[in-house]
Image: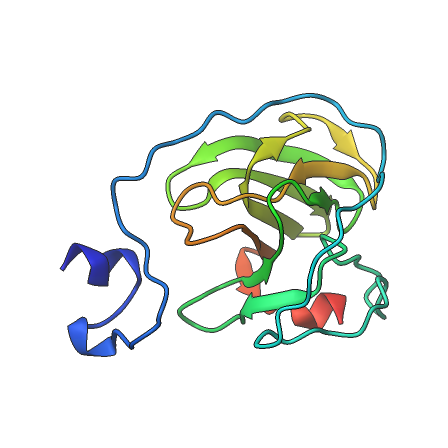
Length: 179
């Protein structure tokens, strides 16, 4: 029953063969916190054929940047999963999608180490499951600045970023903002 609850399932019949599940009881790992320079070199990633790879442009009509150079979507936005999961190697840089002010940088149950940025006009972004945090609450960040490193902290089954776009308090499909 705990597995059903942690994974936002209705009952055990929703569990499918090969499905990744969150198992309670993992250990928190302290992130190494330091201030990096702006976007540096990005580790190469071998292709994973089962995952969707969106186009390579960083900027979209809304102006938001992809939060990472990796474009391997491992889980899409839905009413049960209110963000976009992008899989990649631990340590891959995570970038601020827009300029703004850091309103949270730390540990949260579920999200693990994560950063929340307020971009003004009721728009915020969250970058969750990080292995390292490079910004602190109160910091001003610019679009494209490295803010964290991809990881697998909190309720996570592998290295990825859980990316959320929040507008006027409601979580929106990030692909509508970063296509």
